[in-house]
Image 1 (cartoon, rainbow, N blue to C red):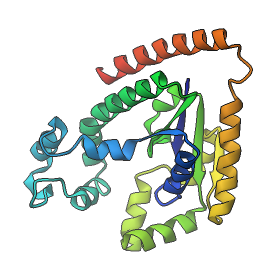
Image 2 (image 1 turned 90 degrees about the vertical axis):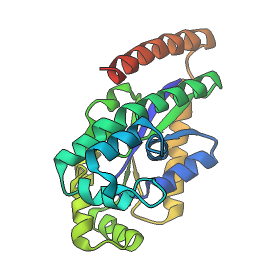
Image 3 (image 1 turned 120 degrees about the horizontal axis):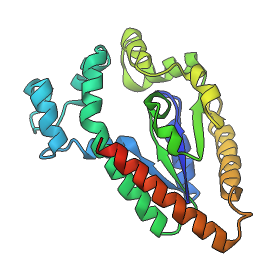
Image 4 (image 1 turned 180 degrees about the vertical axis):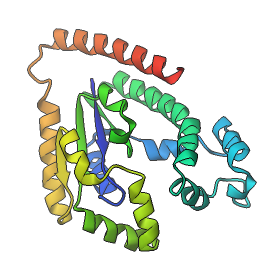
Length: 229
């Protein structure tokens, strides 16, 4: 088994690509979904966020007000770094657990959907392939304004928290251009899926099993060391 890192930019259409991949039966681990789970009421991360950001970032039911927190961290790099230091370790641990489950279920590869994959500077080292879901910057801005209802100024702040999408192009092994219609995107995803499925097809079964087993041990040890540093 190997890992595939999937990323994009805000409103680049990554969710569309993930939907297509799941329809093909691919194993996808969504970092955004996990990020919501690790900050639920009663979790250590939830308590730490309240301690550092105050109770004003809570909704009436005690859950985090994502809009308020977003407004804080997207305009303050130090606050953003603090939030990341609280949430990233439990997110990584949960992703590791899910990856191991997919390994034992016999999946050839697992896709890790990580919005800040290229910004992290470290996660890419664990990926055999990296995939960028791309759309041209102007389309990205217009999509985000329509989707979120944010002002153009607020949209620019959120985009500034990520690497410009054009600068991610040379960092990715594969690019899916989602600037066009859904059918065009689907064709590109099907081609990518075929390449990934074929990438280990030449290995004899026994050699493949040994390679996967050794690789998993190294991966687990590397991730565990990083998670608890």
